[in-house]
Image (cartoon, rainbow, N blue to C red; front, side, top):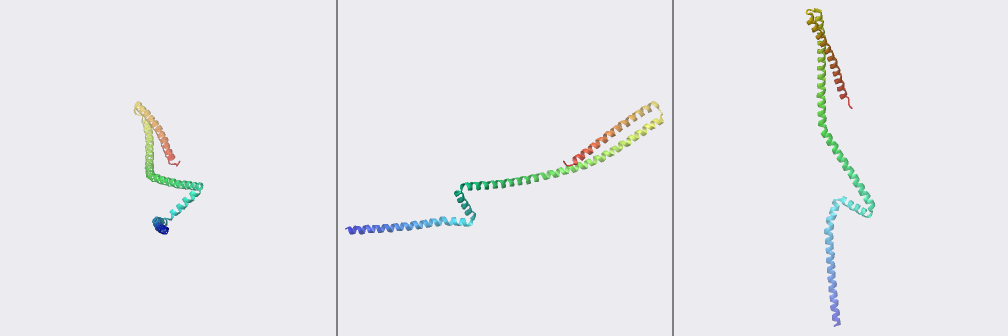
Length: 195
């Protein structure tokens, strides 16, 4: 009976060993299947994007060297930030120049029109002065005629006084107009000189 019991125990041990082998084979095949299902897409991803491999290597290096890694990360952030600021400044300068260009053209057009008008007013101003100068000479002629003719002494004398006074006023007006035109011309020249 002991032999029977020993043989039964041996059979149980053998069946248990076979069960353990089956479980071990299942465990191995399951781990291989899981490993294949996980590593295959990951390998494909790493093959398609080799930069990820470099990033993982860098992360591993940072984990092994934390002070140097933090320094490098801060340096990279500073460089990226300065590049972004430079791009923003470039966009800002370009957009401002684009917005200023039509205004500059309008300003140049207004200055050109002003210059044409100033030339026109200077020309008409000189013509106006010529007319007044001629009137002064004609008043002087009238005054001399009145003195020469001396027909009605009292009326002619009064007319002579009036004409001489008018000639005086006209001369003063012409000198003031001349001074005003010189100020206007010099003011325009000052505006034309770039500051």
